[in-house]
Length: 328
Image (tube, rainbow, N blue to C red; front, top):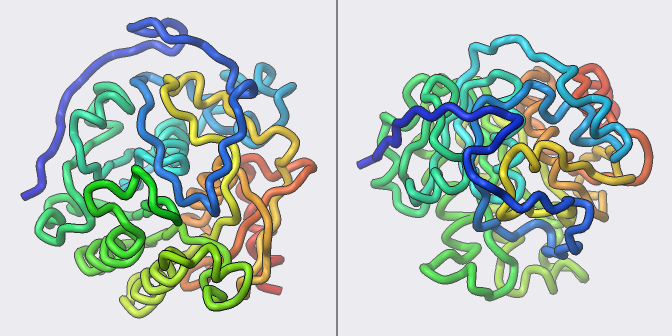
């Protein structure tokens, strides 16, 4: 049975309701998670975010961090986006960006208390939280999906045995069975399902990918992809390179929204599982959101990396051109 968390809390951008250590994200050590199979643990609350959000600020240089602040507004949206894996490094960035775009969001999390520690108590008009575990089909109550127009799934675990595997949180259970259960429960009325996967999934028997796949993570991600493709649902699959920039844990969302991809703002998008490299979590999150509104990305699979140079920011036309070029 799904459990819904409903609460209202007002929170201004300029002054936090509780003190936080305002460490610079640029001072964070680089956390090298192999192909982004890590899941972040903690974040903190926010409400009433100033709609400067992840404009160019998120994928632009640190110099633009203040100049773009509070300059961008987004129109209200009729979407209701379900984010699965919202506690992860990519997922929390997806949620932050959706809220700043005035897009109503719904989260599926295993722990309702964790939702409060991650995102604070939210106005239900902007953010709804349901309790559920994709590994357990019985948790995926139809009420979770009522009114949902789009889904972004960015669940994952580590490629190799780690503490994150505790509680049967293995690649087989998360990347295969969890994705299968979720896709099986989704309504046919959805306009798009975006699944975050990994580069190398078609090459898990080849070096060096076979090393990454010692415990099956690439194999199980590929099985999840294939199940979504065969489901008949309108989908887009985003295969990320090795994830960089974060995960930003134990930071309030006001600080998170000022995160940048440093100098690696330019985006490379390909097809055919040919790209090899790194990608900022910020870029992956933005790609997922952009794909929701680009018609020709439906039914397609893309690989994504980020490199040094100027990037597309949140410009829909630039993202459309990137996706279109990948298909050429």
